[in-house]
Image (cartoon, rainbow, N blue to C red; front, top):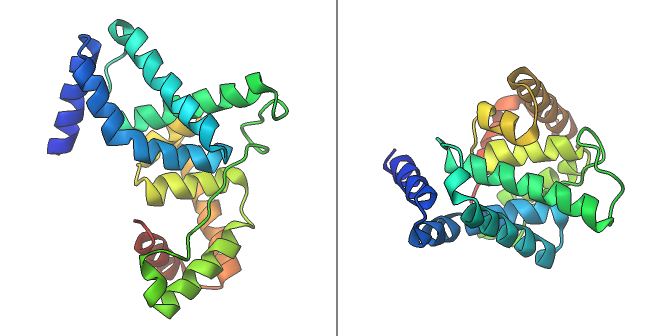
Length: 197
């Protein structure tokens, strides 16, 4: 809770033109934004450019910024929009279809802290293979819900879905994973939660 208040205070200071607040927000959220960005673009330079552009935009427009209750959700949503614009402007991809063709890569590193435990490493391998059978939107919602720990309202804003649509997409993604892995839902949730770094 203190972190949320701190974020609200930082945002308020940024809106007033405090460059130190901008730097603090950048330092606090760069890693999370970078991980998310790499899953969408798989291009390190492009992701860094999009993040940089986001923070330049925040600074240039600081007087016009809206009130924000969840800074992380706001930043992820803004970065997502920047990356969609980047894809379209750069012409690297065909016009982005938010429903189907969008790229979202969700890979798990076997070289994680779980490497010493063979059964968990095997779970990571199986989960990674199962993820390849999901749509990009299903991968994205799994990432936002279980790795960024955002709630459904925040995810609905980021992914431009209704709350009901967000629940449906999440349920379908979990069901698809459950079927591929041939495990019950509680076991799947336990695996997803255990892999959060």
